Image 1: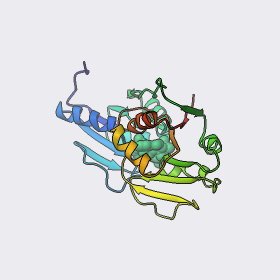
Image 2: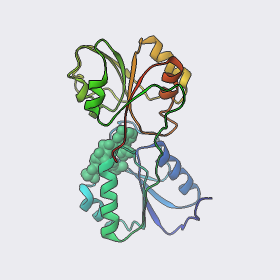
Image 3: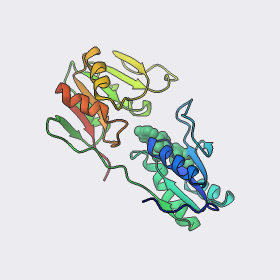
Length: 230
Ligand code: NAP
């Protein structure tokens, strides 16, 4: 059962994920004073209850300053499991200001029978793991694509939420605008349509992005899975 909400407390949620939005909805419904912070990576973020602030704080010191100046009583870091810098900043800033920090963990996906995962530790290793001629679906944010630019022998299908500000650095690429679907059938249809031979992703965990993993299993496609840092 969730802990009771102290209505006098001002809570800062470090967000940008479905889990952070769910926490904001629950706390606001319980009467808490909540501000969700977004990095500002997407141009049109989904509406959230409570207050919203957008943009970086200026490192751990900036976050500590924000906490002090805004009377924040608790921070909930519900950022993406690969968003390591903001999580480290949250640890430092909460230690410096002496306020509690909750960092709910999103468990990594676990390999299931029928999964064909090529497990690697970095995006560079993921790029090297693709065979020549692969038609790879890159389920990666725009800031994680550079490692694949050195593979002109592969065809890439890239999905992103907002159109890129500058052309992608791939010789051979299809760009799809949109979000991941949690529905394996929808993801499988997309993979069939683009004749995908490999799916490349990071082990983010969570339900919202699992559709592509289940779809790859269904179609017998290998998934190049970048693991989390220890
Ligand atoms: P990151 O590498 O850990 O953070 C880089 C910098 O972005 C941080 O130092 C901070 O700038 C700013 N930042 C990050 N999250 C912030 C937040 N919630 N509010 C205010 N500033 C934030 O993070 P990232 O991988 O770029 O991810 C950025 C955001 O996108 C996160 O909020 C994350 O939850 C969300 N997201 C990330 C992914 C992913 O694949 N990494 C996927 C889905 C959603 P300052 O140092 O200036 O404060």
